[in-house]
Image (cartoon, rainbow, N blue to C red; front, side, top):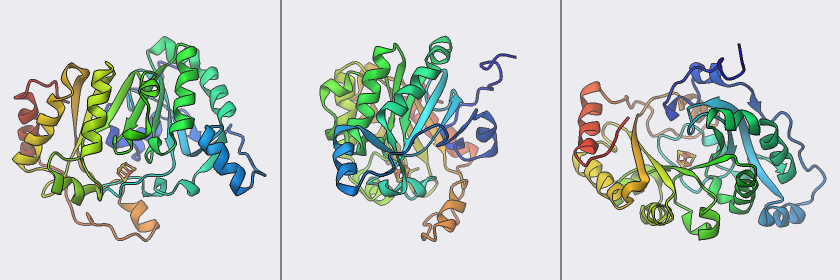
Length: 293
Ligand code: SF4
């Protein structure tokens, strides 16, 4: 059986931590990356600014989870948001990641380049929030484009202003989390503000970057008709760039990490959406003409 045939296709992004996803994963962790041991703090900061190093939480090879085809997904450390439903609170602090040389990352992409091309896959930067390290991510994307490898950015768009138009031009696909449509709800869900996500989505659209919107449906938090309606209206402003919308039902797979890290978990007793609620929300997006999964 070929390397490619071994993968089964499942779609949901929210399966990141469950066993099914783990079985799909070819390998991961941080094996194979050299860490720049010996750099002092000032050198590390300078290298971060130029993109010579990036702080990486982990990486893996997967199929049809974080974009099309077989992909290398790199989870960068650091995130400015604090989503109530975050599955990966261990990625919040950049300093908890491992510094990885740009060259080591490129070697890894080169190694899998043929597999990516054969499956229509590529490299995905996720997190955490990979836009906290724009120099590293955009340099890797530039090199990937030169190799003919597809690039995908998984982001909330909250730090979109960190990206220049030139850097955006190297993104083939953006998995854009529109976490809420209503300002107050967005604040409650993430601790941040909504407008940067809208601005970034509109910049992507203007440059013709494809967008897969992701919306996490949490009963009692993000599920009001008004909130969903507003998310749909925001997506409409991204025009034809939106290929589809993923409605991701909340689940409790992230809870153990909050417990391990001893962070008070605001959704301790929250439940996932019922089938009826999910189909109501899916229909709301469909009524706006979107393809919805
Ligand atoms: S943006 Fe992602 S990594 Fe950051 S807190 Fe939200 S869910 Fe977690």
